[in-house]
Length: 262
Image (cartoon, rainbow, N blue to C red):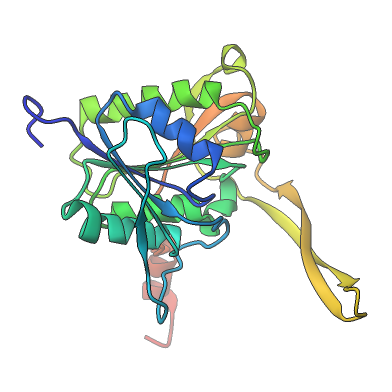
């Protein structure tokens, strides 16, 4: 991109589907910052993680769903598929930034492993596209995104202006579900060790056959005050830098020194 002659290309996707209010609000929040292109799933894809579609044809359908957006598409694929298709078949180039969200509900702590929102952003990061995943701690379709729009605009504008030399730039941003004036600030955090204590509720369908419904309670096992969970509980926006390298370097060093199988 030549900053003197061209607007940055902003790719936007999500995992709640093309009609989700969070997606519409993210488009509105950043539409003045660049040329927005939307590629999103045609139906909700929450919890898909980094899944890709294999063995099923993928289709792109162009839409006129967003004002001031020249190119918007829905696909029958996953959030990760959306990014791959956008780069290869829609843009024919890498966008200047990829945004995913605004997700309806939290994507903090260990939840990021399951999140289609963060996986879409991570796919862009793998391809050296600066990326940000946004989530609002409100699962309702009628959630108020007014504060999230202000936060998203501030963060995206800052990233675009500052630029970065970090090859795999990826931020996970979670926003508390409170009015903007009650947000205490933006806090850089680490991912908390917190997760759902899960159970499967056994039920019977009308034909008397068993089925199971995933349930659980969220539990925080991390007492640190530098985590995303702590920040959100205290009405801060949490920003966690994320990486896709899952190597445990500390354990690797220990095994190199002490493992008799080597």
